[in-house]
Length: 362
Image (cartoon, rainbow, N blue to C red; front, side, top):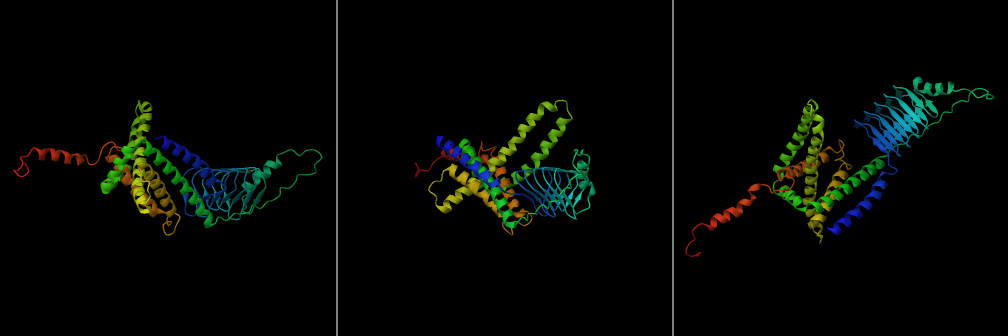
């Protein structure tokens, strides 16, 4: 156990620089046809909303440039960065310490404030006039003849190559793989018997586990939403909300335990294939979970599996997760075997011992 703790600490120390290196210098890209239904915050990276991409929310960028070829339905706020718009910004556009370029196809529906130079080819006078109006309202110091002109600065447009997009996805896949491997290591060290029970059910009853897991994934969220609605209209709802939150952690724990169990079965097959001498449960679970997560992430980057955002790969991952979730549910988080009738062979032997024996057996 002490050795497992040391290994866990070493992996955590290795994970921090690996995640930092993978995040440094990589742009946030909203690809063609991609729709993001949430707010986006980008720190020390550039953002590119490609043509056909759409962000249904507010966008905030710190210390990075922004290229908008698609659509942003909310406000766009940029701190210390330049912005180039060739698409649509339906909300307000605010830039602190940065320049703005509006091409002839750009459209900004909301108000606009730019703490820098403005180059407007679109005729969007509302956006350009805000910057000039702000300067026009400033008092001219005595002794300065007239007001200085605002220089127009062209912001260079950065083309995002498929290679850069591939390495961005690669870094995300490696990060998920390391995280899941560490979680598998912790779960195996703390709950080895539970993991073995779930893994045996995954191996013996994959069809039943998959069906139960799929039904659980559909029914549990609906049940939790119904409970929240009922509690919201009752007088004791505020007191029971924490209980509902704790109840929601149970299916999450079952899903995580099931995924590690599926990874452990994959790791067992993997160590047999490579003829690895060390075949302990900790090794097979951590190695199998990390490699399985990494393999699914890499497949989403390789044609033809990348078609449709890697729909086929995500479907395979959903099937595997359903099998693991169902096995965790059937075994009650690994606390009992499935099927419970697995104890019958001992009872049958006891009954056979009570039957009369023949003379030869005596």
